[in-house]
Length: 173
Image 1: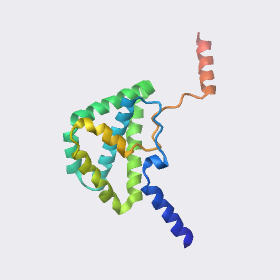
Image 2: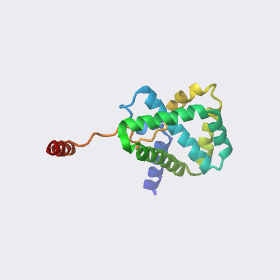
Image 3: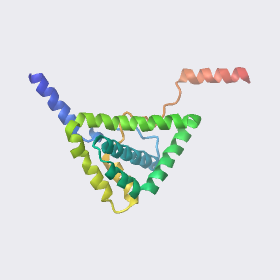
Image 4: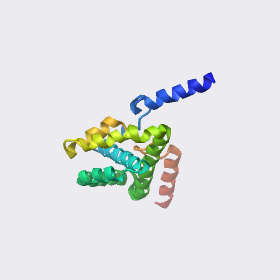
């Protein structure tokens, strides 16, 4: 029984800590504008999952209407980032990126249980109270919503893969 209580206490402490104290997505390879785009995408994903899970489409629709131009520009920036990183695989990676964000937010909702709607409902009120759309990126950055599991800096191919690709290219030449 003591182990159960200790385990639940540990889970509670970890769940209440901000993401920066636990784990954070590796975004070192991104420039400031790219990092801001990923953070705004994470905010949008969080709000979408919140609206879906809490049956609150009206607030999400109000968010989309208020920030429509900025969100469209942000989506284009994410698309460009993924094109630079993945080339022709950009659309597949964009779909993976969006799915991974939503899955991470859904998992957070499952961990919070019945408190999810109350706890994160505050996000809608805060984001709708921002003075201007230009405040959206700074607000998103302060929320640490980018899942630690999100791969924002693709790993270069392993050395053996690069050597094999070089040998294949040399044979063709």
